[in-house]
Amino acid sequence: MEDKVRPAVLVSACLLGVCCRYDGGHNRNEQVIALKDRFRLIPVCPEQLGGLPTPRIPSEIRDGSVFAEDGTDVTENFTRGAREALRLAELFGCRCAVLKARSPSCGSKVIYDGTFSGTKTAGDGVTASLLKKQGIRVYTEEAQKFGDEDIC
Ligand code: SF4
Image (tube, rainbow, N blue to C red; front, side):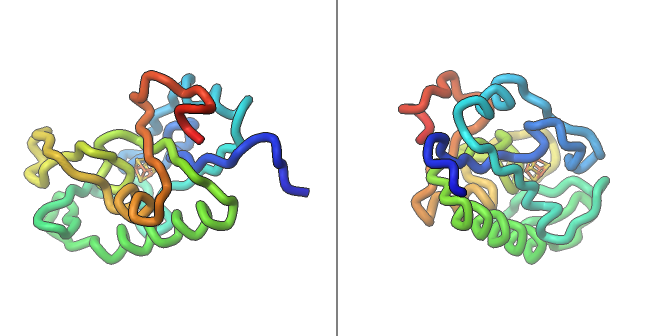
């Protein structure tokens, strides 16, 4: 039976401690994990959903495409992963998402600039961008407030 009390929120799996990050690590965040008491958290890793291995070569967005640090064009993987994340968001009725800041998939408003130099630029990750286009509100783990009224 559907849980009508707690809204569903899509979450970057690495924020929950899943070792899906490009280097095999995670970005466990206790503030995000604490959201499980008020929301149904739906974990996704768009890069894994897009068929990329873990560990994998880090990637960044440049000129609207996504490139691994060795120059391989991985745009198709990132696009596929975004579609799969959206599929799950729609399946579970997520109206908002809490995604990892600055990731080329999950980042919102600020991402790395494609030079692999740590330089940031304005922009959304591929998944964050697709979710926003579908009307899903995207937050990062760096959001200061996670009250019901702030998220869903
Ligand atoms: S794609 Fe998103 S969920 Fe997966 S490791 Fe990167 S930031 Fe985390």
